[in-house]
Image (cartoon, rainbow, N blue to C red):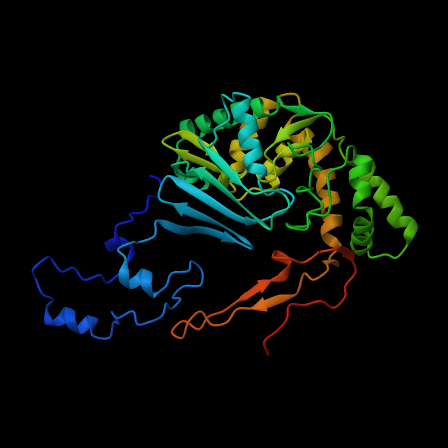
Length: 389
């Protein structure tokens, strides 16, 4: 499957254009189509698109057609095409914003050989800024999820070998403690997942610190799972979860969200592994665990079974499941069962006005994604999204 390229010719971007060659005149039919189209700017500039600032002057007095196009949007960030060869991340600042750039720069400085990355990346913004921008060259290809089911066993094996080589090299970079590459604490993207920008929980330096940092939430979850208010039973179960939880060390450089959607391929070659936002020095088992738990494609088990058999030949799938995955999943279930984790101001919102008279649509902008404090709390306070009726 060839990579998606956009044609930025006006006739491809603007439906209904009517061409008139020099010296010719429009036909009666063409004039009829244009009879209600205003071609006089008037005395003032009028905003036509609040998303990009396009106004009547741009529409009437220039031949410019923007070569920036929205590609993907999520919560409070968006990925834009800059032509066909570049992409731009426009994101509000969280604890991991710009982490993908840090990882890219680090691996480039280390002279990475087997880790496929985009060729270039630039970052604009600092931790204290409300928003930041990352510009990167575009990996020309498609996500592995798009084509995996149609591949031959030989091609699948080739991709597995490339992932194995990439992870082998990545795991050579180690740290004595869990951390991001800049040395800051490592937000928990494995179990205690308070989503960005809150990111309240962190991976502890050992399992006692990691479990201890979310013990209050786990107690509430355990109560719900056991359907009991017996504190002794809850504490016994919490201790059991901690005892079975795998040891953290050693800490290895980890992508943390390695699934088919983040593997860009073309003609049998991995062009780039993308989306390093959650990367950092995690416990040795996290990459293997998340490669299954974050899967977006059932077929990915075939690939990662092969990868981990090669990388960890002494730790069979059965042993990893019994000694690591099940224990981690048990803690994850207790965290998820604590359904009353809230963050202050998380349900405040602005209602958008109508986009325009002919398209009177308008959603909400959550304050939590813009400027709220988001203090972490356990307990239901009757919060809900505001309503218009």
